[in-house]
Amino acid sequence: MKMKLVDQVVRSFRVAKVFRENTDKINSIDFSPNGETLISCSEDDQIVIYDCEKGTQVRTVNSKKYGVDLIHFTHAKNTAIHSSTKVDDTIRYLSLHDNKYIRYFPGHTKKVVSLCLSPVEDSFLSGSLDKTLRLWDLRSPNCQGLMHLSGRPVAAYDPEGLIFAAGVNSELIKLYDLRSFDKGPFINFKLTQEKECDWTGLKFSRDGKTILISTNGSIIRLVDAFHEASFSPDSQFIFSGSTDGRVHVWNADTGYKVCVLNADHPGPVQCVQFNPKYMMLASACTNMAFWLPSVDDT
Image 1 (cartoon, rainbow, N blue to C red):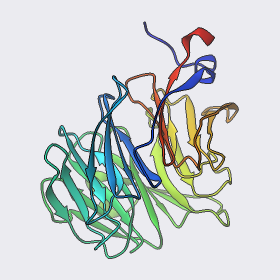
Image 2 (image 1 turned 180 degrees about the horizontal axis):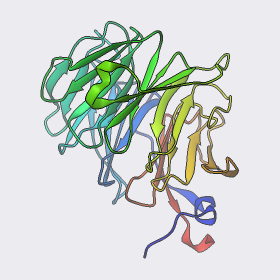
Image 3 (image 1 turned 180 degrees about the vertical axis):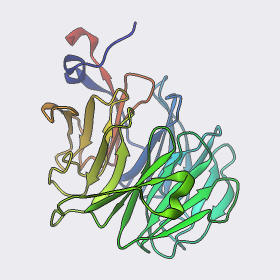
Image 4 (image 1 turned 90 degrees about the vertical axis):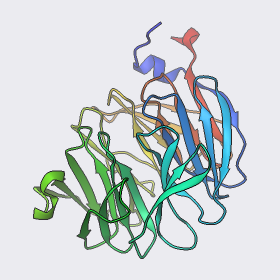
């Protein structure tokens, strides 16, 4: 049975399963491109892999030596990239099959705060508190491109993988053509800077028409986001975690709040993502919650 994502269905979402594998907060989650697997990393240095179809935990991988944040599946099966929270600020390419590192990507001299993978090829972008944005190829440890910026950067690829957006100092968005990024941005958008609020992430909608800015404050930018906000695959809805342990949902076109989904999250919801293929939502604090629509309510 195919279900369309409309307001009524969104309001019917209920927590179907809660996982309590972690002893500290989950700081990053990512669905595999086929939607079958979810990966999370947390401040207790654990990487946990979940089966979305069965609703089960598959396995846990420890990263005690380097710590782990900003984890992303790559296009190859059972591999992921992540930033480090200990030792240094190197980005690491991990084989989840045998828990061995395939490659290291050194270069950043301060904490990496943004990491995003190209949707179409084996390249990725990283942004750091050292005020640089770096372009990498998974097949080489050498940086492929370097941009010096005027402040803290966040970055995102567009859905076609041809353009990337760089957010700088929580007030400026620069759009670059990947084929000629060394020529500088082809357009800049300056937004009014909000006090007491930093940008923590950028995301393009699936249709490429909108950029969603996540912040670490309670100020509504394009959306009020505690840490991470996420589009539904059809770009219609925006899901965001918050400090009250609930998930807030807006209509992306009108800005109208569709609903607030109540969960048994004991702490602030750091991460929210909608599955790219299945009618399923994941949200995380120290616990991981899988959400499904309750069809009877629709």
